[in-house]
Amino acid sequence: MQMKKVLVGGCFNSIHSGHIYFLKEAKKLGDELVVVLANDKNNKKPYAIPARKRKKKLADLKIADKIVVGDSRDQTKIVKKIKPDIIALGYDQTRPPSLENIKFVRIKKLGNFSTNNQRSENKKL
Image (cartoon, rainbow, N blue to C red; front, side, top):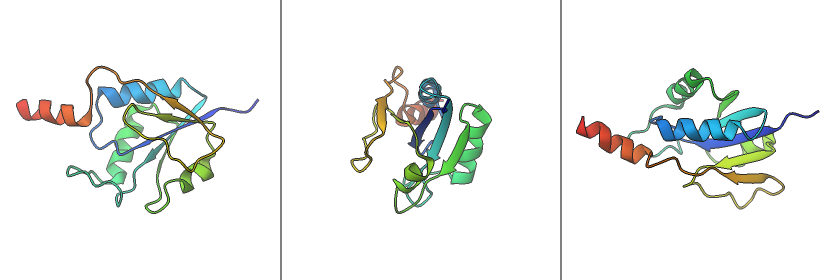
């Protein structure tokens, strides 16, 4: 029996409850969860954290089975290499138009958690 591989992608600069919920829900969709981190060149957030640090933080959660850094020029390159059965998208992510024959599943938003909201809350503390 073939294992079902689920892929998710994102920056994951500031991991919050919404990210953890998203990752756990995505993991329920298959047998193996692969997280593709945005390459440092594509991570243009003003509070960007280097990929090696983001990878360590995600690994510490022990949710993903594999964590890789994406290609800076071709975001579909890693998808073609990993060959997922399912790509789980967050509520605010768009489906890449060039990927055929892959099932996409949208994970609903949990409450009002987002990186921007968390950053606002941290400023209040």
